Image (cartoon, rainbow, N blue to C red):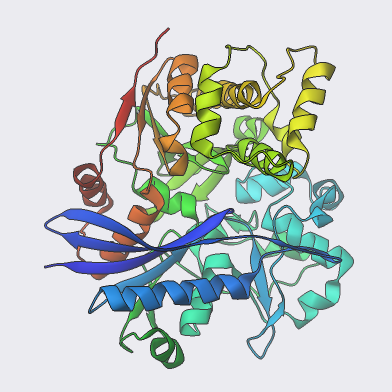
Length: 473
């Protein structure tokens, strides 16, 4: 029997609506609608244009309704940590802030004056990053506490979009686990920790697992989009990395790790239990929830963000490059041993100049043109992959022989080969559409069309081609 699902996948740069067709244990994906996800800078800060995003999702549904006579499910995944606050009337109190908004600069250190860094990690198992929901929430508490007084529900981005579709207000577990106020051991929100910070957490929504049936789309959505009123909405791995990791085409065992490659590179292993100890605290690794109760023990790496920012800067100067052109220029550039501290380039703006200044200050060869700069970025990413690989092996006691790279960045053959060369491990790249595949197939888990996570990954192996890269040195 043929099943059709709509997978909405929203990343930090763009979003898309994918029509997934499951037939004879193979999955096909068709991109129906792609749209930019451009933040809006206002005098009060940097925001996501959440209403425009929902408009684009509805546009994707209109197209899907024309393409398929019946849809067996709809689900949304997004980037992590960001959220919206709803008032008692169900309306947004303000538009959701962007995780790169400057309001969280220095906030972790202020928070640690009340609850120590060590206690935050023991409670949540999440690495400290200024972008985390915890520091966004604490920034509101410090600067605009009245917002929390009026807040009736806090919904993370995929939960907010699900609410717009169905009217249901709940927190899907994988996205909640990115917040740094969720405890992966107790599987509950860390309300006691929030209370110590002066935050009464009555606005936290009920937690649900990926694969939960939320209900049909609201009647007005069905009418607006030309859908049947019994079109169902499910939770999946609401954090896009959770959906992507679900679709890693591994055949099992423990000798593999993954890199979900895009704006961020999220590199980790899949475990049955979180690793929360002094060693993982010192390494600043994170324990996030995955599909089927798995733990994604990983490190957030500033992935292709530097490349994206350089491309934006060059475009402002009138030099328009496609990513394919930039990678061709990088491949043609002379090899360089220059290594960037990727974390030093977290904030947006002026990346080419900042990279050159960094190289001068650290006494390294300065990239003088676009090709050389792109090669330095790619080499620096590969070096970071090696460092994180060694951390993962040390903290889990596993020998990792295979690195699975999934997501849009898996198309970057130069990065894939450099990753193999620098780490000395075999790299399997693909599928590029792992997030959409994981989203759709988790819906199929919900409906019983796919019996297990193992079967889900078997379908991915049968459905998508991958490319292997072996170390050349």
